[in-house]
Image 1 (tube, rainbow, N blue to C red):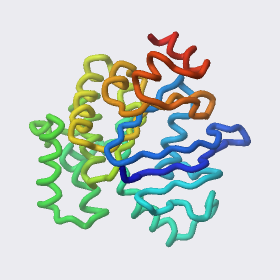
Image 2 (cartoon, helix red, strand yellow):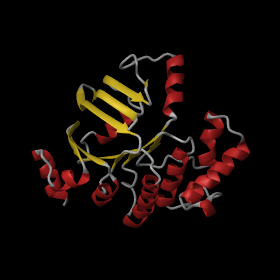
Image 3 (cartoon, rainbow, N blue to C red):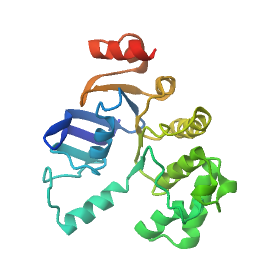
Length: 253
């Protein structure tokens, strides 16, 4: 399978404290790789390094054959380098724990904004595409509502549609249901499941273990900033090889 996202030797420290030790990972076309582990194990830092919201201290991030940080840590990227990175990064859709929607814009406007500003798509075309994406996530009737008029689950589904608006090659989900109650969580998980059914390439962090076991092509268990063990869901959940993975599984299963 074609490699979409490659992480090689990625590490990150904050104020001298390691948040992420050197890690390698390849996400190929059609993969659904799910990161699991306790809070603070490094999952969010790995995500932020993957799309260069946090510039890795070491290692490289390669998206569809293009290295996003060819000069390493890049403490002072030039304007040209920053613009190049921004162009590459639009091929990664990112959905955070918080929804990060513009409160003064409707659901449709939130989704249409990026294609209009980044891709210079005509307003009518961008709105039509936004309406299609809202239909795909089951929110077509909420197109004119602002975030404050929607539930948390609805807002997160709008955030997913917004990430899809730029037609990314890979979607990154960083614990997208962590702030939702069980009913709203199921709304969002149904939307993510539909994406996997359509073959979307994904890297996802979640505490929803049953869901992870059902949708993942591969599970990666993280502990203290390291990917400790990777494997098929049935292997990681039911016969892990590493002691720390066994300990984690014994707590959650």
